[in-house]
Image 1 (cartoon, one colour):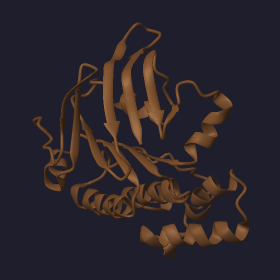
Image 2: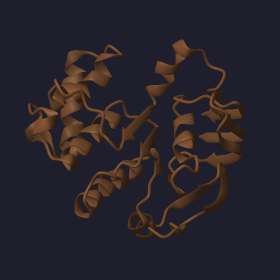
Image 3: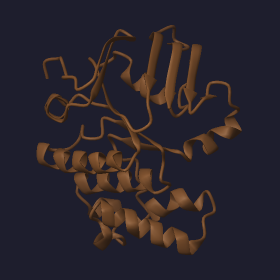
Amino acid sequence: MIEMKGVQKTYSNGVTALHGIDISIDQGEFVYVVGPSGAGKSTFIKMMYREVKPSGGSVFINGHDIGKIKNRQVPHLRRNIGVVFQDFKLLSKYTIYENVAFALEVIEESPKKIRRRVMDVLDMVKLKNKARFKPDELSGGEQQRVSIARAIVNNPKLMIADEPTGNLDPETSWEIMKIFEEINARGTTIIMATHSKDIVNTMKKRVIAIEHGRVVRDEQRGDYGYEA
């Protein structure tokens, strides 16, 4: 589903974040991306939804070289990709329902389908009873569940999560990880950058470790491998 061939990224300030990355990820995999701060994890993640373009090499999503698509095609690419961030990125003036519905409104789904789908995903993340709340009326864990609902409302084939439990307490983090496991069990590929040693070591998924912009380890059922 995802293939990187010789991917390099050098930013305008001269910093090279990635050096010759070669990696393949199959449909339905659950992959942790680990490594020290500043290792290149976020750049690696952002390549997959075209937030960052490679300076060299190619990034393929379902056979399409996304480094070569035009900017106007990027929104179409992202319809099949859900993204979850550490800081939630919810729209503070919108209700929970409106935050999730927005992802369907921009692709002009019918109001009937929007309502049914939004309530389905809010039910999945156990927030159906808070659809009319605003983000600041929810806890951090609840806000992250809203961001997950928003990311999956389009039934994406790929979900990318950048430190999704970074701002959450351990108990809430495990609740969030159970939701990710359920999403993965339904066939969605999940790529997750994380610093959580406990989660990685307990859940035993594929682990890709990045250091100094290079993949230094790629293991099935891997461990975190760093001191937390």
